[in-house]
Length: 591
Image (cartoon, rainbow, N blue to C red):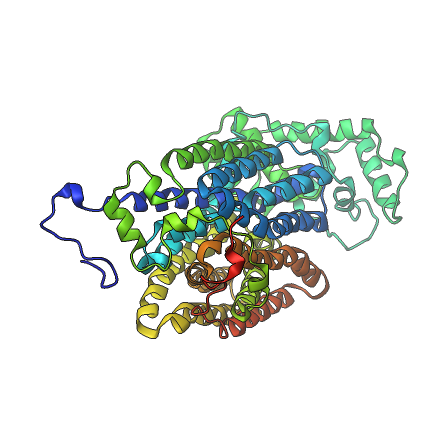
């Protein structure tokens, strides 16, 4: 069926004269790049427990690494968008994909906080141009009547990448540490000995009551030699001061402790249900426990027992799956070479230059647009800062972006920590729960594209573009407020899903607005608003961690609700009928 705003196609013409469909292929390839973008962006969030332990980071340092990405990502939005307007989407997006993929791989080679911070800053610079470039290429390759829908597909691709990030990351971390890998402890697998020693203090007659002994503590105490007991007692007694003598726990003491723990890890009879009552285990540990009665191999017994000790003493025993996060980053980064090659081969900057695109498709794409795609590409404009700074609607869109990201980024940074700290959800289930909201957001993304195109024809451009944003932001604020009532973990997951849906249902409208008002400067204008949005994402991890540390999780949810409310109010003043740069404005003079 022909769209009323599209040129009529004579059905009697031969198939050779019908428009080709290369525009759909180009959109699909752009969706693929968006998928990789979000997979690389958020894989760190779901490996954070292992990264933190492996690199010996504090929560604050981890928060700074999250924020570093969004900081450089925000600052590079306008320059990278202008570079795409100036040198073409094909050349620049290929370069951007290779750059951010390289630094995603480099995460797997980091050795400390400073290096991780630098790598995240560099990855943010590489990713900054992805969405401004995608918005610009859509404005050249997609008919006017399908802008919202096509924008939703690309944004949907990003959300799919973000939604699969927790599942793929969790699964691959486990896959890279198979049961055949030794589960025995080495010297580096003993982390902070103080909480371990404190567990035995009351058994040793110290009368502390801070850590009442559990059955597993009493069992281990009986296994330890007199020397090991004495060394642990010395550690506990020295822990009252902020610093303790280096010889309090000698290397020889550690050797004895590791030898005893490894003996238990190797023991087939170590697992006794009463010893580990009311503890939360990794999913693989649960599977191995269920299979224990059927008989386990020697390596499976060792893996089960290692996971049992990790669950009993999480601050002291290094997580064996921490060995898997580095190869995961290297694997994800290598995918960028493939995606960059596919994009370079399949894409051209304008339809008329694509060898697979016929004249009829070029006419279909250009129909109804104030400027043809070839003209948009031909004139290389400067960044229209004067027009950008004087646009009231664009500033309000920036506020909407800012508030939306402050609230939304919680879902991809601190949500896994919330599920672990408050509900003690094990790794694989935690990955699924963290992914559920993002999966639900997919439906909002697809609905939002169709909705904004539909509302544009019914309500006009003014309200058709902003109604999905306004309603979505107020709905998200309401969901966060309901979190204050502290329902069950699955009810909380459902509320987080509402937040994701309400955010994503307005995303296509945000993209389409910038294509409506951007003209030949879509990349620069998209980059400007994205810059402000990602400044919100920059402060979000640090801000929410500060709120959490001082006021608790309910204050975090209240902060996110407030940010969404501000975003919704700002969207009410946006008018997509007002071009940022009128076509006769002298600011568009070419270089």
